[in-house]
Image: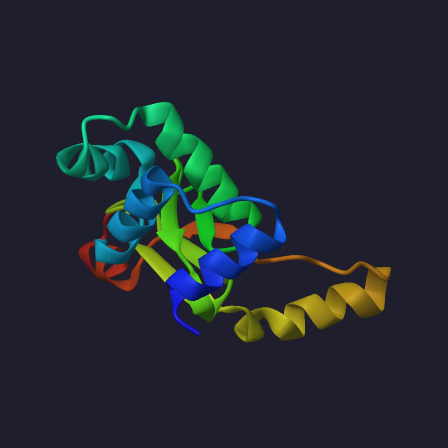
Amino acid sequence: MACEELFLERLRKSGFRLTPQREMVLSVLHQLEGAATAEDIYARVRALSSAVDISTVYRTLDLLRELELVACIDAGGEQYRYELLGAHGPHLHLACGSCGAIIGVELDQAEPFVARLRAAYGFEARLDEVTIPGLCCDCQVEGTP
């Protein structure tokens, strides 16, 4: 199922409708390569229509998060970044503290860790919005702190 169809289906099930503003935000998210700040998304939406304000972009991103179509990534610093998940679903994010790169990791990679938490503590971990800070391989080679 295409992302747009999935979004429409989830919107309708939740009692919402597809407004032109929501459609523009979704379109911009499709055009992006990787994650972007709400301000970056807003700038691209504004290029399509001056009738959309930043609060509409934030509300739409929040709704897309609720519908599990967008991930909110805390990569450190002051701003969150948003990434379209679409039909692929949630995943972990590795955030480089030096260059800002975001690397997506499938949740099954963390399943041994989740299983250990479940066995030891009876705790069911949700890792779909987890961001792990560190250094990417390029920054490690460069010796960047």
